[in-house]
Structure formats: structure tokens, C-alpha cells
Image (cartoon, rainbow, N blue to C red):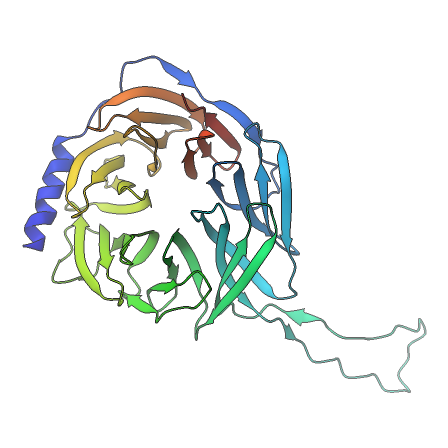
Length: 376
């Protein structure tokens, strides 16, 4: 049954490949250019600010920007531990939740003191060697208020290094997916930082890039895999996978998106299950965009020639957005509720992430610039 669903989905995707709209193309406005040495891990768009977060040689940070790109505030993390921040999300109150990995630094042993008789004409004093970076085995949550004030830090010790790839927060809790060498990991937490039991998803060939948390405590996990889930076998070289996990947690549903001799992935998603990804084979590279319903059946889907994966966002009045790059030229498409293109905009570079709020509109981050499409 699951295999039939997979082939039906593949057929639907083939039939729905579409050319770009011939409507006028309007360039997006640049609101901020990113400094070449600024390490940004992600961007979030709230009702009152755009948030950038990332890492520096001495710690991590999150900064709030006004809609014109000017800075409102900066919050720095400096808790004397080794850590990296890799992904983030906003909750219903506008608070920022960041997740990454951390560990206490390891002190190196002192050098052996030289013999009193050793020649030391310059009077050099040999002290501590300092510290070395340990394996980051603590999955870590940081909470920062919308005013830029630290509001909590929570850790889940693990037995292997971990790198969170996505976090989703709603009124009842938090869902996180992460990479580990033994396989991808799914874990939940309540809003007080109490973690649930981790669930291993697949083995070494499964990667999870995105998670969407539902109001009933279940979660939708997205990525790619060659592995078997609920008797739902691989179709292509590597398939895009959608895995539903209940609140226990337990895998309860699996959907594959694949084609023979091709590799696919789902790497971007919204809470309304608009998904963005890619398809690649020896002759074709396509950005793929699909709107799924609550039962994980596709309602509309399109593909476009591209050299990047599709990044997606949901707007108001059932509008949807997708951005992708093709040879350095970026395209932003606006869709109506049926998947029809109603506007086209251009930008330069490869899209990394997008965010939308009704108050501020749509913002797109490419790694070099932040672009805006103001809400109408």
C-alpha cells in the first residue's frame, strides 16, 4: 500500500512539472548585506523583528533587526562552555528558542616544569597549555525573550556528538531533529526544558533536515533516506522521506518521494505542510515544491529547473512562497491556494531560508544578503 502511494506521488510530480510564469519579474529589495566574516546559522521572522543567530570565535549570538535591516538589540552567549548554535525557532509569545550542542572544555595537563639547571637565558615562564575543544555531546536549548534577555538554558547529555538540524515549537512543546553518526535523532521537550526519551530514526543513511510539530504532540520529520520505514521501500538512489511520529514517540506513518536513478530530499517545510526540496539525476536538477494535506497526501506540486533545493514559506490568504537558484539567478514564486503562480520576483544567490509574518512581510536570506517582499 505504501509503495503504491509512493509511485502515485512520483507520477503526480512528473505530470506537474511547470514552466516559469511569463508575468513581469520584479527584483526583491535588499535590506541588509551580510559581512563576509559573519557566521550566521539561521534567520527567523517574527511580528516585531527579524532575528539572525549564529556563532563567533568566542561564543554565540542572536540579534534582532528592524524591518529596514537596522539593529534593535544583540544578545551574546558566553557561558564558558564549548558550544555551537545550529538552528532556531520562535514560539507563540515571540520568544526565541535556539538549539545546538555543548560540552565543558577539557583542560590540558600542565607542561612538565623545566629542570632548574636548564638553560633559560630569556627567563621564559611556562604556564598552562589551556583547553581543548571536547566532543559536543550535550544537545542544548537556549531561550531568549523577544526583548533580547536570556531566559533559560537546558541540556540533554548524550553518548555521541550531536548536531541539531531543525527545531519546531508550539504552545504545548518542542520537537527537535539532529544528526549523529549512528543515525538521525528525534527528541521532544516541554517548554520548561524537560526532555523526553530520544528516538533513533533510521541508521547512517537517513538524514533529517526539518521537523514540524503538530498541536496534538505528534511531529512530521523530513529529509532523505535509502532505508526501509514501515515496509515502505526505497524507489530511487535516495528518496525524500516524510515520517510521522506520535507523542509516545513512535513512527506511525511513512511517505517516500522518489524516482528511479534519481536522488531526492525534503529540506524545507512550513507548519501548513508546504514542502520544498530537490530532485537530481544524471541529466536533470530540479527544485520541487509540494503542498501536502493533513493525511500527507499531495494536493498540488510543481518543479522547476534549478541548481539549488527549493526553500518555502507560507503567507496569508492561502498564499505560498518558494525560492530557488538556477546558475546564480534566484527566483521567488508566489502561489495561490491551488498552486498557480501569481507573482514572480528575482534576486541574486542561493536561498538559505525564508520567513514570513503578517506584520513585516516576507524575508529571504541568501548568505550574502537579506531581501524583503513587503506584505500588501
